[in-house]
Length: 344
Image (spheres, rainbow, N blue to C red):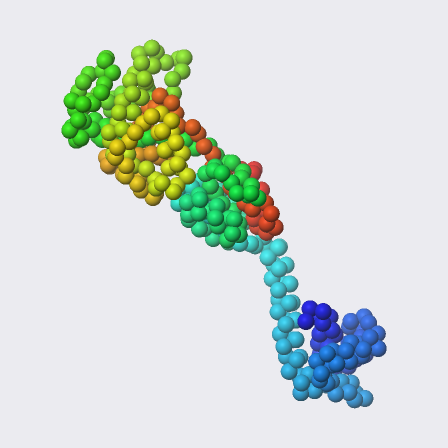
């Protein structure tokens, strides 16, 4: 059929004109060339397409059936060209993005908000999945772009980091202050020698002061000592408290687990939750200590609803970035979005 597309267009033009001479003028080809094309098409279809007379040509019954389909086909092609011109001139497009709920809320929305203002005719589809599931969608060409935490990438996938993130442990001051009483372990809880043995009212004050900030030369000796003591207490709390973390299949969970193993921290009570924002909220109401991303918990940290627990050795920082299949021919809309991300 593709090979005959030009032949069909000649047939279509002759049928509309009702005259070979007029059709030749419109198509800028000779009358013999048109007659030869029509004869060839009739031979291939084994039918007569036109009745010929001195006044011109008219469609046969079979020719009329073919004309109705050919007319619809070329009408669709014309509409397709018109829509494509509109698509290009208005900057239209459709971008499919895979992203976790947390990354969508705390990172992607900021990019989309301003990009959509500049490109109102581009549509988005958002598939919310974990980083690992997003990578599978990307490999199978089910999405155009993935916003992911840095992880091992399959061959052919390009990753462009856009932001650093920091994993931390947080809890409410009430949870910290009441830990010994609630757990019934006040006598067993281990304190440094110069910290009072009664945890109530003392541990939270250690964690909420400046001592949980990274050590530097401008801190006083006592502040540095307090930092060390508070970090020691963090280890005790992590091992004996209710530690709330993401599910095991999550890239963030793997990163935090690797850190805990490297620091010889053995947690006895683990509660798995599949949403970072819920981890933050559960920590705020005193359910336990939560492993969260500092950048995603800024408002709760600033308000004092949760406290960042000091660590002797910080959890290694990570990056978040956009990933895409470098082998796939990206649409104009996708290229425009990636270029926007690079410059913002």
